[in-house]
Image (cartoon, rainbow, N blue to C red; front, side):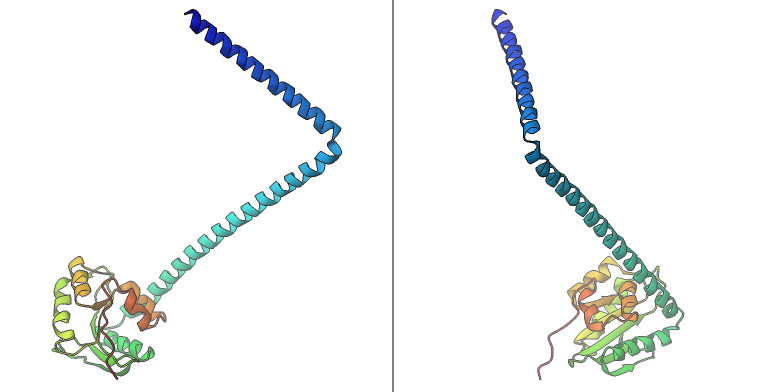
Amino acid sequence: MAARRRRRRLKKRTRRQLQGWGAVAALAAAVWVTRHWSMVWPVLATVLAAAMVGGAGWALLRSHRLAVGQDRAWRAQEEARARELSMAEVDALSWQEFETYIADLCRRDGCTKVVVSGKSGDLGADVIGYLADGRKLVVQVKKYAPHRSVSSADMQKFVGTARLEHGADVALFVTTCRAFTKDALGLALRQDIVALHRDLLGSWVKGAHLETLIPLNGSGGGTRRRPSA
């Protein structure tokens, strides 16, 4: 017990000594600053000005980043709204008109020898043409309601004919609905089918080039090597 009391007294004494030394140091610093104020105040003013400039710069940078982020979000919303406006016009087309419209988009992007089957029994080849580099393009077109999904059965039919029957180098499945089922996407990935859902179709309608959309599909590249010259 006596040893514990001695330790407590020692701690209190040490604390008081440190407090005293701190007060002396603060007083000495105050005296030194007072005597050398002519040298101190320019430094303090410079530090204060630098802090104010730095704070203002940081605030401006943060405000700029926030504005840029808001602008990007706004542009993304506007682009999505513009796609939907264009897709509303596409939705108004009949399925025959939609096939013709897809053929026109292919021609717009440099495809040649583009033909529309426009009849039953076409074995999944609604539109056939050739890309600018000579690869054969075969397109399956499905005009579905936006809330529907392309099923695995739909994809299986196209997989079975796109290359075996039509010799496609690029097999493209285009639909007006928003999604492909998980099984349909998996099959497209394994069989190199380009799956173009409603959002990507909207970008195509708004001017995106077909060649830039092929790598963006959610189900694989959909391309084969270019034919030899």
